[in-house]
Image (cartoon, rainbow, N blue to C red; front, side, top):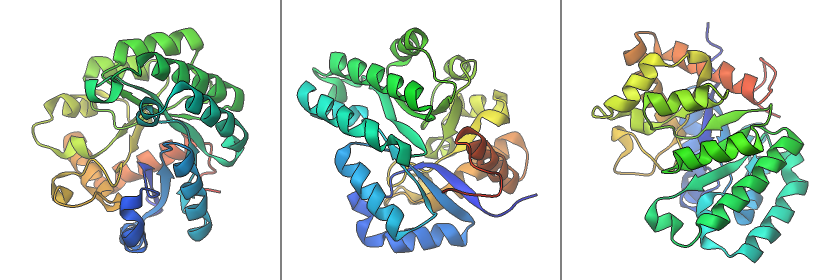
Amino acid sequence: MTNNQWIDAHCHLADPRLENSLDEVIREAESLGIKFFMQGGVGPEDWQRQRDLAKKYPNKLGLCFGLHPYWVAAHDEELCEIALDQLAPILPEALGIGELGLDFRPHIMKDSKVRQISVFEQQLELAEATQKPMVLHLVQAHEESLKIMDVWGIPASKGLVHSFNGSWGKAQDFLKRGLCLSIGGPVVWAQNEKLHEVIKQMPLEFLLLESDSPDQPPPRFKQSLNQPASLWDVAGKIAEIREMPSTEVLEIATQNFKRVFRLPADERGN
């Protein structure tokens, strides 16, 4: 069944923390059959690092450009507007738009709530205009994000909720809007019964797998930077819950990714 060409649906290989070990990180992942790495955009500096890496590692990276809520919270309105102006013309290079969304944790939000909402709305407009699938970052902002997406509309290109770690009720809110749930390291932790219930209940055609490396490591990587190789840990836990082979979980998630990001079935990227 498997083509042994699996996809990490969300990671940050352009993160400076991985710079000195990236060759080894990619080799390790590829030795395990993980051959394509979808990026998560943060801000203008990150976009350029992604482009540089795509030249160094051709046909391995899926570019994703967007203004992450962290970036928005750390920059004033004028700089956000400048960055949005820079974003629009480069989106044709990308597979997706993101990370976009809201992060209302107190240490992130501070005085940025209004700015985060405005930038989120403007990126929803860009997603609609370009029909790029969205990579959503939504933390402690469930009701607000749903309200905004329902008002502004979810593009026909849909997308994914990155690192979903909520309840089955919250999962259903996204699933009924046609959004995939990208599952990462948190599912591996034994005490995460809430997310395990989501895995039991969700239709597998909406499942994606991510490492979010170098962050959100599963237990095996908790003393080090996370790597795309941890996708096997994620798939293994889901396989245990669903009583199916890990390779089947990886294959289903890879085919779902290709459908969402409109990749031919026999290609990993462009």
